[in-house]
Image (cartoon, rainbow, N blue to C red; front, side, top):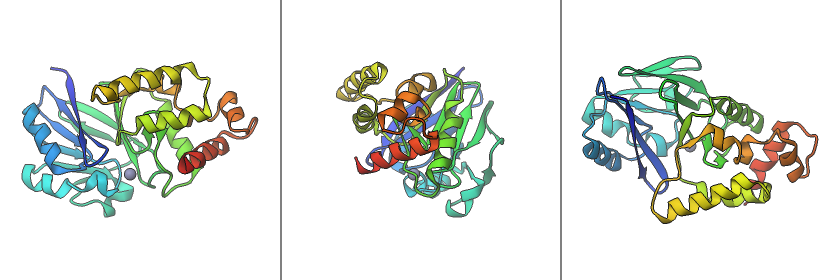
Length: 255
Ligand SMILES: [Zn+2]
């Protein structure tokens, strides 16, 4: 049986997602935003929670860890650099580590910027990545603890994943992100197409994720800060990509 995922909303606009290994029965919750919807998802799927894979310490990603752990006795895996801020951690991981989920394996990629210890989990065999609040569909997380240069290099690491990698992010922000992205690249036809697609999905009550890295590279301005047309679009032709990225992020903060 292949790996399966199950996606659902938590809190106001957080995504909860379960990753399941059909062979071993192992099931991970990626982050733990809210206990009730996660438990409901476990009931719907019939899967038993064995692991929680934490991307970063924010409360809307960790708030349900203790409740879930006491009920399911699951293992809690968290970034080494933020373990002190995350409850009930069993195992800490860092760049280059591998996390087993039953017979599946995720590579840990450190993606600091939103928080200093933020990590992503890349299940290369399944072509799936869980990127938390670093990369969003047509957006990226706020640079809260790091600086723009740090965030830009983290985003480039995710951009370097194979084009057919599907990524799951921590929030449903796509509509607002597209509205902003259109101000940076009003003439990008791929972005225009994504706008139509996202509107249809939202109207039908469907999630706008996952998205492939390959598609995202063509439309997400935060992954495109090193392209001449994007630099020119913000009046910064010829400037270093990290500076262009910082300007785009600053504009989004004010948008
Ligand atoms: Zn966060």
